[in-house]
Length: 609
Image 1: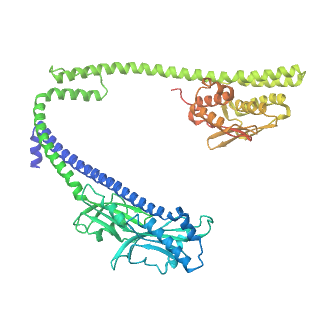
Image 2 (image 1 turned 120 degrees about the vertical axis):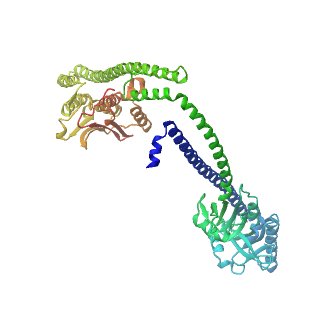
Image 3 (image 1 turned 180 degrees about the vertical axis):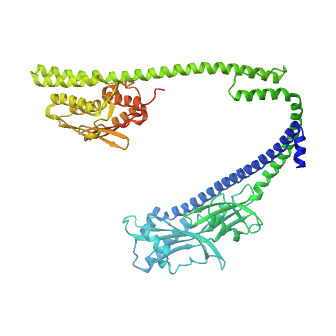
């Protein structure tokens, strides 16, 4: 309580400076810690990435070496005399000895001597072994090779097989790490005839030499282990690292960038890749402490320098606050009044210095802000009215594009009927036209679905007079939907599109089906025909026109082919926004289906803003 009372008696400036000191020191400490962690993570990530690239390149080199061994097993195919000897069946002892001499001479001169790491090369058949070795010992399964898995697998495989690193006696009692490859040999004349298996045993010293070239930026360790966790190579520059202890953890983790911890508390960054074809894993370990040590020294030095600069800055800030505190608070109080919405206040001018200039600028800003708000209010009103008028005119223009299109076709039909003395049909067409024109008078209004269907029937009956039995139609509408209101001339242009692009372009009878049904809160209207259909490229172009909502007048080809569909689409979009859509599906040679979706409540009309 006494401490709290003492704090209350302290001056505001002292409390402010104390707060700034504590806050700044805490902030610097937090930033330094975050910076230290960030740099540490960056260093660890960078080291892990670089190490991963190194061991991936090492893995690539090892795989390339194994590929070279695979190519070496193809050597017999390049020598026709050797392939001929393998195919031949000598009948005498002398011929058999001559055959063996030639094949083993080939194994010596071509496959073994040019490469120092090759220890043994064999060509194995079901009843004969041809070999050349540099070691006093033959391969471990020399006498039972026909029963080994690798021999059976090589005979069945179309590709060479890899025999992982294994230990065998080669130069004495001490075992040598050997890796082998084998490939079956088939006759060049008869691909189905298997002549035997070629097997190459090589010292893994080449892999060791590749590993010796690897150097890490920090102290680290490199291991190559087999799939059964047997270490075949190790290079350890971390004296405290117990290889036998950490390798099982590394294999179990099997994830690049993981940090594993040894029994002595030291931590290491793990990088590991698997060479599935070679049956090996490459493991790299880097000391975590070595990586972050330089970062820790740099952050510590930076932290001390920042603290010294902060002390100097706080001292200067204290002097500055003592001199300019009063006018600054005056501005702050005025700003609080402005925050309430009162823009008529002004900051009292006390000094003619920088703070005074700030006060003058603040006063001018308030005056300009008042002026801008008034102008923006008037401008928003004007923009709203212009957009509203633009939408209205656009709606009327789209509606007017539809009327001449149908009237022109109808009058042409009536003219032809009169010329052919078909007066009764002409009268029927005139009556149907009259019915349609009465409906067109309300094109800018919503009408009942039943009224729209009357217009459609009138149009189709006129077209039936023109096309005769070639054109038929059916209307399937749920009676409950007949009183649903939709924009006028929504279905008729879709039907007209079917007639124009089907009846006029084919001689086969065409049937138009009009179907309407309810799906949740949407009215779905489909108009389908069995006409020629639309080519896939043209169908995609029409769908893109719908999606881009381009004005049909900007595209001459669109005017000729799909103005009715685009007008309907744009009218529905103006009225309903994105709530209404048109879907176009067609199969070339089978027909076209157009589906229109309209909100059932009819109250989702888009605002003109």
